[in-house]
Structure formats: C-alpha cells, structure tokens
Length: 223
Image 1 (cartoon, one colour):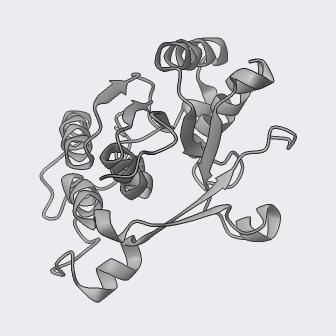
Image 2: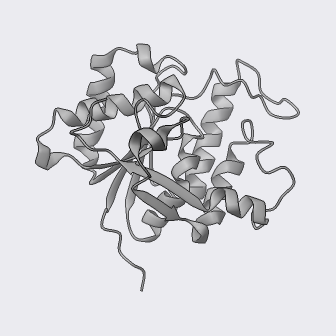
C-alpha cells in the first residue's frame, strides 16, 4: 500500500519553465502518494540565452518552444494542473504588484493548498526567483495565520546556509529519478549539456539529482 502524503493539495509557484526541475522529485513523490499538484509558472522564459545545441530556437520561437518543453516536463513529473500566468521573463520584479498579488491570491483561493513550493526570497540568485518568492510570501502574510499553508522554499545563493541555517528538509528522491530526469530532459533547449551522454543511472547523474533541499519559511522572518 502506498503511503499517503499529508499534503493532498500542493501549489508550486515558480517564474520559469525548467525551475520545476529543482523540485520535480518531491513533486513526483507527492503525486505517487495521492496529491494533486498545481504549477503556476509566471513566464515562458522568453529571455533565456540558451537556444539548444546545435541551436534550434531563436528569439522569436524560443517562448513557443519553452512552452512545449514545460508541458512535456509536467507530463514527465505527473503534474495534473499547469497554469501559465503570462508575465514577462526577467521583469517579474517590475510587474504590477497588485495584479501579481491578485493573480496568486486567486490561485491560492481556488486550489486551497496545504503546501506551497517556491523560491526563498533573497536567497535564490535570479531576480525573478526572488521576486516570485517575495510575492508568494507577501500574499500569504495577508491571510489569517490559520489559513496559511506551509511554504517550502528552494535556496541556493552563496552563503544561504550561513544566513538561513541548514535546510529543514533534505529529501531523498532517488526512487523518482526517472520522473526528475525526464523533467530535465524535456527542457531540451536549456539543458542540452546537463547530462552530456550519461544515462540517468550513471553514478554522477544519480548523485547530482538524488537529493532536494528545502527551507520551511517562517512568517516571523522578514523578507
């Protein structure tokens, strides 16, 4: 009998196609345990620099290609509900804050998640990552404490462990490397050099993909 996940409605809020790869093993595990996953992807990554190798995309076609790659990645993971919000890549920090907050609140009210995955604001390197995580926290801070879902954040900036302490969750996702590897491979325009010619069961690939780390956001912390 499969173990039932304590979180049956999970919302993922990330800015770019391929960001979900960083949490894909955990998402596949939630799905295997019966959870419904909604992924709100803010942009289509249309400003990405990678065009494939050899190049098969250009600045005009890249957003269409990345949209299809995102759909394929979600299919590999098993995500049941993908929502593309249509914000512009590399400008999330400059987006209309009221509109962004309203869009996120509407999704939260619709999905009613008990768990949200996003980036830890201030510790996620890319301005879009930080702005997305900050928007999620900003919206949740307006909700009554009892209505706030748990928030698990990805952080990987230099010195993040010194600032935040060790991760609260270190998840072994080895049983879900097929789904996680498929998620990476779906983003062919971006990750063509990620594996090289190594198969998913190659020790270097397994070591690189088998663990996911999360910090649980404390709403007493400042953003």
